[in-house]
Length: 444
Image (tube, rainbow, N blue to C red):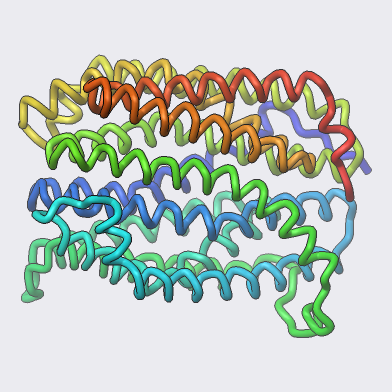
């Protein structure tokens, strides 16, 4: 029996995803906001630490993307056995990846920050933050995997409320541990890291409970003995390329951050604040793209291919409207908003200029977020990676170096290069989708 997804249905699906993503985003940004009243150096330190954690999250997200796509497809096809296999294999893979990643961070975090040219004034604080947060990556990995499974079962509100609880706990923990309330010591950036780990641990516990009580999927060794290699290969065939595009993006951002570190603490703090505001501007674009990815995966599994084109076009239009509107409002009120974090006139003026460029950057980014997720949902996973790697490194990184460092335009030049990268990729992805070549990639 065919299931019809209207634009209203997709909008309803996107709202809890949006709230969940916004709350997850606030877990990191709340750390930066609350530390901004403690020390600008702490903000710069956590900004460098989060650059590393963003890459870790992308690595972990490889399996959660693939899990969402495959479960959506198997729900469309009505294959319960394979749904159970996907859940169990995903958890095995993510547990392995998490432990390896934690070991690498614990072993080489100093070398990573030396390579990033982190200023000496914030080096020790950045090391403390990444060491504490990096030691508990397995919690983050399992949280993302269970959230992906529950989203596939359309339990979007449950995941949203879990994120709300997690974020509330993080705020309370930050207030206590950063500032030393209720007889606790004043820990600063160390307290922010500890609070983040505790809140994520509670969030994971809630999601596991919901999975066991609210879904008919099963966790059992019988689904991985003998190990289902076809499922394993399908997860990797979707996850590695789709994760590769996001991984390339975040690695390019780390390299760009290396350029920014040359310009000093004030510019680093400006970058952190502007990126934080940009994240808020495009978070709904991610939400509606993820909702559409679930729908497109279901439509592909049910062989309702003619409905996919309309869904993708509608998502792009809505995404553009939201991200551009929010970015423009942030630009009009940039001094007031950035003034919440700092009164430094240099940061306020540079931030205003960056947010203006961000308006144009969001045009390309809104298209790219939607197109990448929907191409992955139909199995066209390699194309976004190839295009992404070429454009990100040849335009954003190389262009950022030329405009920002060599030509002396600083952070403004770097942001212009990133805008050009997003615009070029957006054009290529639109042409790709219109060509209909993705229809040949669907394999259920």
